[in-house]
Each structure stands twice: as C-alpha cells, then as structure tokens.
Image (cartoon, rainbow over all chains, first blue to last red; front, top):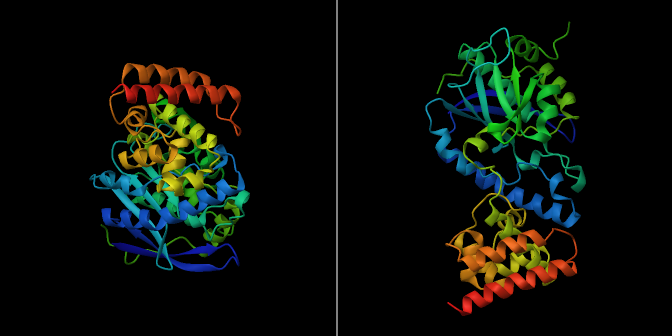
Length: 210
Length: 161
C-alpha cells in the first residue's frame, strides 16, 4: 500500500500529530478496520443507552459493518483509502472512478469521482450527549481532500459527487463547499452533493494567506 | 496502486483552517454504497413486527436492553438493531437465544423474524400485533394486551404443531 505523509489534529491540545494517508486498501484491511471499530461502536451504544439518548439522535453510521464492503472494494474502479495515526485506522473512504457523471454546469455530463463511503473511527465521533469530544479532527476533511486529489489525477479536474447521511449534510455544504442538488429517491432519499472544478480549486486553497 | 512517494498531504495552514470549520459540522458520514448494497432499505413488515415483539417482551420482563443482551448471550449491537427495526435479518442463533431468554417458542419466533416460512395464523397475528403496538417507554394496557394475544397465538400454533 502506498502512502502520503500528513497530520491530524488532536482535539485535546490542538496539536498536529503525524499520520499517513494510505491508498489501495485490501479486503483484509477492511476486516481489521471492522475489528478495531466494532468494539468502540459497542461502547458508544452502551453509553447512549445508559444516558437515555433517543435513537434518532444516535450517530447514523452506528450500525455500519465495514467488513460488508469487501466485495465492493474488489471492483476494478473502486479504491480504498484510509488514514492511520498511532497505528490505528482513524478513517476510511471508498471511491469509484467510473460510471458517475456531473450534473452541474459547465461540466454537465462529464465524469466525476464518486465517494461511495466515508467515515471516521468511532473514537473520533463527537457526541455531546455522552460527553464524547472525539480524539482527532481533520480526518474526514483530509480523506475528502484526497478524493479531490484523486479526481484531478483521473482527469476529472476535482469534480466529486456523493450522497451524505443527514447528520453530515452541513459538513459537505459548509466545510467542503459542495452544492446540494436535491434528495435522491434511488439512494434512500439521501441528499446528493457535487463539487465543481471551481469549487474544488477553492477547497484545496483554503487557509492560504491572500 | 500508484506511486505516492513524492506526493505530500495538505498543508499545515489548510489543516488548521479546516479544523476550525469542522467544529460546527462534526459528522462526515457518506453512505451511497449502503444503498447500492441494500444495507439501508426500509425494514420489512417481518422485521418491524419482530423488533417490536422483542422490545415489548423485554419490557414486560422489566429488562433493560443491556440486561437482555447479557441474559440471552447475544451482542448488544445485534439486539439494538433488532429493536430498532433495522433492515437486517437476524442470525438463527440470536433468535434462538432471544426465544429462550424471553420464554417464547423458538420455532414460531423464527417465523416472525423471517427466518422460516410463516404459517397463516402467525402472519395474521403478527399483522394484528403490528397495528396495535406502539413504541413507548412504558408498556400500556393496550400494548400488554396486544403482546399477550400475539404470544398466545405463537404458543397455540406451537402446541398444535
């Protein structure tokens, strides 16, 4: 597996900690992820139950089982990415580089990179109801940054599309600067977002001094 | 796989900027593939009825979700998924263990869970039960009646073979 050196921000002291973006995850890697994350998800669930938090307010991906995504990862156009920090998988993303096309002008009809799955480790979740602050920030954003990079490498000029779960809609609109294009009946009514090439350029340049 | 040896990640400035923005939007979950995989379809009627039946039977015994998971020796996650009426077919062992812990006939519970072909009497009782029960913190008189009636049918069908 090839890697790109990066950092993630530790929430407790805002320090940037060394991490690696890995590309080319294999099926066995997803099984390791599921093994590591399952125990933490179970703890989260127990804390939510003990605190009496209503189920609609639980993290929407609490029931995901990453080992079930193995067949998808084996498709030719799929690529698995992960961020590893302190020897643990902090976040995972699966992208597809074929079969998805831009809905927005001016590149309408041209191919884009589709983010099929993206999630951070349960110990990075912020759940105020049970006083969970999350260990690391910037994991999800860095994975999305990698998706934009991959889109450029594929010749898609940074165009990215995805269906966000409801709790994540603000992240893709406000942080990633994507444009919501309506709910998709074929995808459980999830909101579909797209990043144009212009928005992609702006996203990659965020934080640069003017 | 591609050769990333000379590539670098996002700049420190970018990371610090994005870290501030993330404060207002902590969730990042994307799940398009869940739909492709049918991992997030609406629960079937059988799954809804099974989930509701387990929840009411548990509450009738004054057990918390955690206590029932321990008593039945099943994963807490599995039990929560069942009671949450999520569209996941439970494992045979899980249903068997729940039947034992809740003193329900295992064979009929398999039918309610969609793991075995349901007899017409079970189907009819399940539909009636689904129409009468609502998820609330405390078992209401109507829910207790609905539960008792459903369990009675399950036992009678079991006895009758």
